Image (cartoon, rainbow, N blue to C red; front, side, top):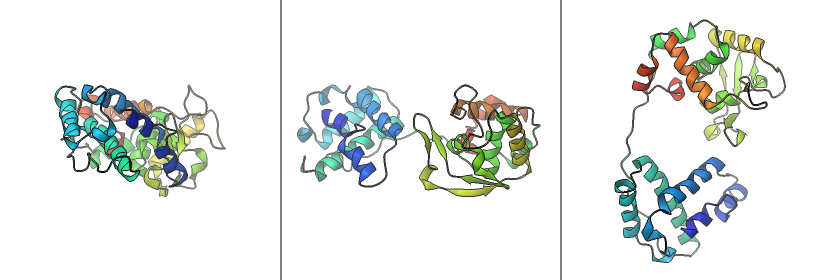
Length: 262
């Protein structure tokens, strides 16, 4: 446990190497999630409390994985997240000569419950584009996802300087607790926008408190210098689709989320 805790410290050797040697810093959110998994799902397994790194076997890890599902009751997705952080740390322990063989190598992932992502029909998408601009700030994130294929973080990170002459230059991604980052997977791109998005952008611009510079298109009304929250996007989607006749209950049943718009 002490090895895992030290390995996944934000200022630990592995995280520093990722940032300074590989030039690919790990997301602070990802590191924090791993630290939480260690605290909640690994350090709570009693056989690990006094077990040394050099003594752990493949069987020990498989028993822990079984315990995590049967006795600890976590989902397959959460168990696999914890297993992944263990595998990374164990592989590095072998590379550093701390242990001769990797006890986590070859351990199968737990079964995960996967729910298919729902998408809108063409008629439903057309109905969204035809909605009146009664609340353009609420509608704009939905149109940007639907008509421009923008991710939630890209919508939140969009700035006025990124919108020029019918083209949106997607070069920002907002991540809570981290701020502005590059688009996910380095997917910088320029996308055109049509009449529905154009009209909504104009309406939002007319309402904006600040225009120009690096100001967010969808700036928070509560936190200066930050965009709207994830929840703003989700509730805006629920409301927009409800206005077309698709109830929130139906949306949840079909598993329609902001990412469904892509």
